[in-house]
Amino acid sequence: MIPCKDAVTRLWAYLDRTLGKAPETELEEHLGLCRHCCGELEFAKQVRGALAKTGRAGEPTDDVRSRLEAFVKGLGQPKSEG
Image 1: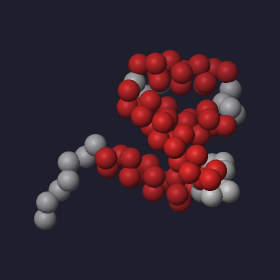
Image 2: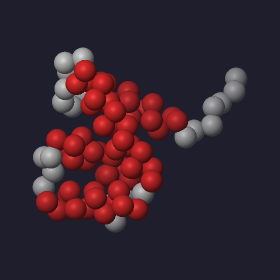
Image 3: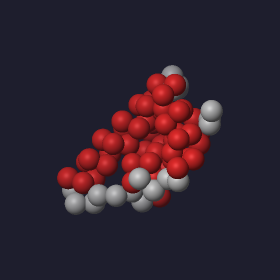
Image 4: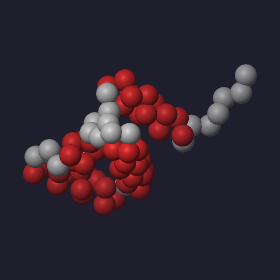
């Protein structure tokens, strides 16, 4: 099974239906077992929907994508005090 890092990097291409057969199969197998990445996929779908409503459908810019990925990674982290 592919690691979560690889799965997450494939999500946008998966939604665009631009993954090859083997990478798509690997991702779907991963999604069948990993609740975290299923949540990432749902989040990506929501972002896509929000972008479509603003007329900016498609993959977000690299800056937006990296900021979203950092935000999502931080969701499971305990907040530091100080």
